[in-house]
Image (cartoon, rainbow, N blue to C red):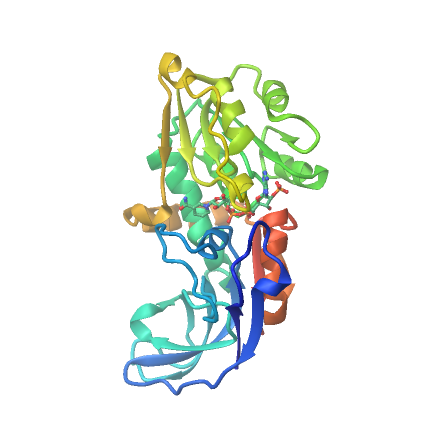
Length: 330
Ligand code: NDP
């Protein structure tokens, strides 16, 4: 079977040279193990951080070792009564076509309830992230005006739609192309701007003339600075990601207007979705309802083949995706 290993650590934006496709022998499942044929794997922005040799909330990828990350696939051999052959499972060992792992490390998914890909996107980690960030972290309330950056991505699309479903008065976003802006309006965003054409400060004034109460930050940098300037009194920021800085080779300057947090009584709170495990089931049961009644749609952008995974990852960082970026393996 084939897998992709980290050949070298990127300096700045990742390149083809940082990845290598390898063939390896597949171990038979041992006691309590299953053999999974991966069907779809996820590429995610956090993987860029794991390519650096730094201490973080997840350990770094190792040189010459396979990359890993969310994947769904079908069990093709099993030594576990709970996870039989034919079951579809979600697990954390993507970036390879097959994998043998302990049955305790997979979650059986219901592909009648939703397509397998949804468990990596709208019903999966990105969806839960959107929900946790809005509810537990930002404390979004009915009537709030909510601004979401990276709004056309996996987390951002869901965040905007569930903000509406939870009673936000006005939901606005930013994204990097005219097509993405158009899509956001179709998905129920009240307004959105292209940050590549309009400086964030100006864009925000146009889409939210009365200010914002909640900022869901996927981007950091100038987006965060502009949002701090535009937040209303007692505004709240869910610090979810800072993708504008992931390829940076020097420390980025902080928001120059952070002192405004004092006078406005702002709250800026970071989070990692895994810090709120108790909210995952709560989100999934709500999301099932919203998906069924059409209030929630999760777009997906597919690439094909394991050999296409590094390019899919690089293009994700560059903004080629609308909704969740996924790689079909079989
Ligand atoms: P996305 O699907 O949003 O993909 C990344 C997007 O980021 C691209 O499509 C691109 O869209 C945008 N982007 C890239 N560079 C820039 C830039 N310089 N400025 C503004 N936008 C940029 O990824 P996810 O939905 O998976 O993740 C979104 C964010 O949430 C990331 O920051 C990620 O790290 C974070 N995250 C945090 C979690 C947590 O637990 N805290 C969990 C999951 C994700 P565009 O065309 O608009 O530029």
